[in-house]
Length: 89
Image 1 (cartoon, rainbow, N blue to C red):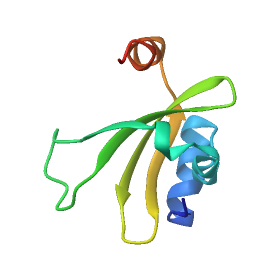
Image 2 (tube, one colour):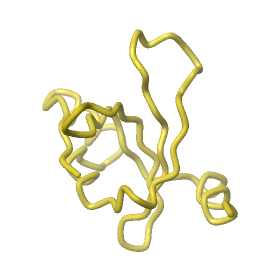
Image 3 (cartoon, rainbow, N blue to C red):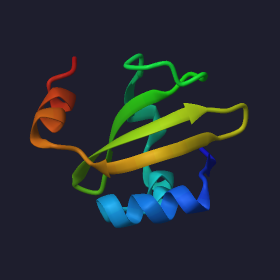
Image 4 (cartoon, rainbow, N blue to C red):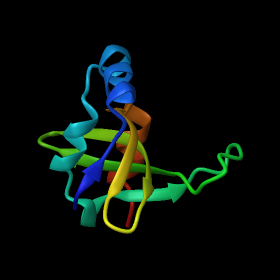
């Protein structure tokens, strides 16, 4: 899956979470669990997703585009999020 992101947002994400948005390219998108983020009106459909890269769980915010996934943020998932991912049927 091709990914895209805003370079300025990438710098912010690296400073805040220590992870480049480009890291999302390593996800197996077939195994990502996601849901629509309806916490506020973004004027677009944004999703929250959880997936594994190496031996770590990651949480990301993204939007699907015709030819790519536009990554908005990515960070290491917390223990509760990782537990919820593992317990999915």
